[in-house]
Length: 438
Ligand SMILES: *Cc1c(COP(=O)(O)O)cnc(C)c1O
Image (cartoon, rainbow, N blue to C red; front, side, top):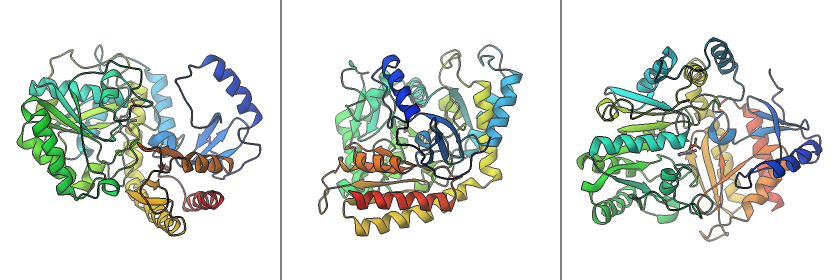
């Protein structure tokens, strides 16, 4: 089913049907599950989401970077539908099937590094992070896990311990998993450090406060997601990886948000010249179906004993078929280049907005993973209050915008690579009106 790629607001936002659903939701759904907007989605295609009241929104969030190749992509729908009717579940640990193997082959081909690679497939990003840590611990015989300030790695017990922000992710949910160490990373807008200096600071923490001999892995997002689309200074990641290699520490790139073509390369690590030992993928990999992966050096991946990795639904055939279709569409439609097209329109527009609105302290990101950080004009003090004002304005005018950031003062742009120039420009126009209305 296709939907006209057009913005159209026909009711108040939220509309009457959304308001009625919100009442049912409040009565039936746990309060701990929040939603950015009280607008209920009904259908979507390409870069447009249609709500239950018939309003059409330009989607600049893509379900947090999941619908990278576009909503209800024809190839994904066809592949998943066909697979659904063939075999819906087999459980790879009982009777294996080809699609799981094919996804592993495609990941081996497209992740950085030319060495022999293997994968394990899972259901969610957090599960990929958990399994990467299990594998690194088994391989090294060490327990310690180092993560960077402002990191986001998930909501399970281990991954919430690895996530930086206490509220809402950790507060009240302890005790947290042990042997997780938070070390400073590289946040050029805030720390002003070169990549070399930021890496030296990180390494001092790793060596002095943890000690390499007790460290199984360092886990880093090449471009931080929830933390505010923080792009590390040049040379930072390469220096960090070099230290890991020299010290027998597994270097793990959490590419769950930054991977799968979002930045114009299959994996953002490539922009920084790093070839991680293990690479994690999830969000954009299967056009919205739940599947995740740990991919990396065969000798590390093979460390755990048979039966040590897996899960009932992990690597589900329908999700695997969708993932194969996503890889196919990235190639067939040259979607890596589309990320550059989007950056070419959006980034200059954001820099132009910054000239008129000094509340925009920083414009950053790569490809179709861009953000603005809002500050009190003339300072670097976070301005979180402006974010809900802008996202609410955008929603009222038919544009879905997402927030991010440790300080809640970042607006992130994760449009589908299928978005047209025209829709993107229209959304930028709404954003500009939003700034004018502040
Ligand atoms: C979303 C995300 C996760 C967690 O993925 P889930 O599928 O929500 O468990 C982990 N790491 C990063 C970088 C993410 O963006």
